[in-house]
Length: 252
Picture 1: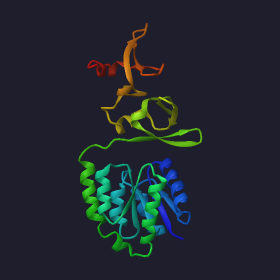
Picture 2 (picture 1 turned 45 degrees about the vertical axis):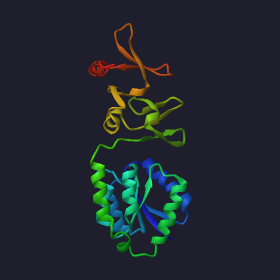
Picture 3 (picture 1 turned 60 degrees about the vertical axis):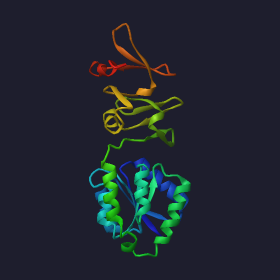
Picture 4 (picture 1 turned 60 degrees about the horizontal axis):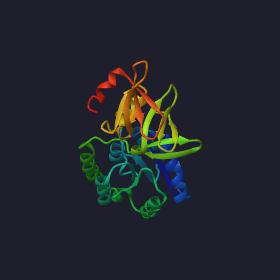
């Protein structure tokens, strides 16, 4: 039975990839999960899986850095959110890739490719990994990479929400509400972390607990207490603006 590990710092993404792989390749046994590149290296050393599914960007050692260590010990499959430049680099390399969020049809292609690698020496299959990683690293570090979607829970379901569809984020003590035009979802990531991972030209932080999509702003008003409130297109919500963020609206 072929074996694999999954390395991704997002638990929901690990769960989703495990589920999708189980559907596309029921015989594949996921024998370990890691939250970062360091843990992935340890798992490969201990468990010797046939394949390692590595998220490119993780805390500690990244997926790229981990691959440079374990690339001769297991077949590498990158899990990536990056654009066509990265995909082109993967296509020229001797490894495969899975784009986030993993789609069933694309995973079927990956599975067929991986099956052909099972009987090949790992060193031969990954002989061009180092050169490909160097090329990819240059492309990724050339400009900031921001979140392209949010993984959020709606009841028992996991949904991948494109960031451009999100009107605003608003946090309380435990959860952050993700509001779109059609529905509301919940995540555990606080606004302070989201503010660092989202494109600042698209999302403005207007309060310590609130981020708003610039394209969703209908206008700004003041209430009887003198507070500035952001009006959201198509919604009744009014989002308070802290004094420290009022300068954002001087240009409007």
